[in-house]
Image (cartoon, rainbow, N blue to C red):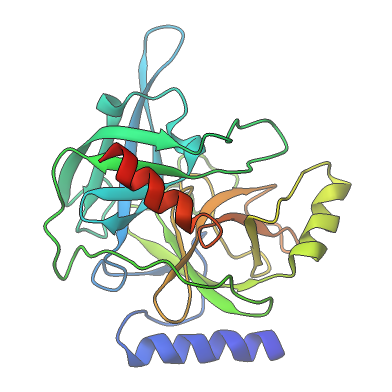
Length: 264
């Protein structure tokens, strides 16, 4: 009941500011959002060429940090050239709105994508031209503090709506409210499955509601409309007691600012 009340309070706070709709569903079957509600959200489309020379595409989420800087997950851009990354902004429809290309990209130097750990799963993309900021596209501030366990937050994306169907990505932007979990408890849970959790991760759960394939790199936002995390990984999309893991952007605030200054 306590966690339910927290979620309802967050929903009321955001509704009063005209930012989000009802709190009742999930990204896997979640509630739709207008881009004006979360104007920092972007859609990333990456071209991947397989061993047979065939082109395939994968998608991720991202956020507008500066008018020419996008934040996303490092694992989204592994072995992908900047020419093969397209950033769509200003629309709640996937791969729609306005398109801008990426001129440079830098993943955290300590990220290596080793199985069972996505530590340092963060990347900065510099755009070939700045995004014209406005109602449909705006930057988001990074929070000063990591949220405490029990705090409610909003996560959004265009990822799969059905964990058992890899072709179930949403055509429209969806969101759900989740609750920050105690990191130690999540570490114990994932340790049983041999997964390694670091202090620079945020653990969330909403009992089967949350992110899925295609949502990686998308934002986790607190009740003040500040960025606290980027969707990173989970053990499964729709298991009620299996939490989702996010990169804690508060812990990487200095790195983000330094990386953005280096590559601009």
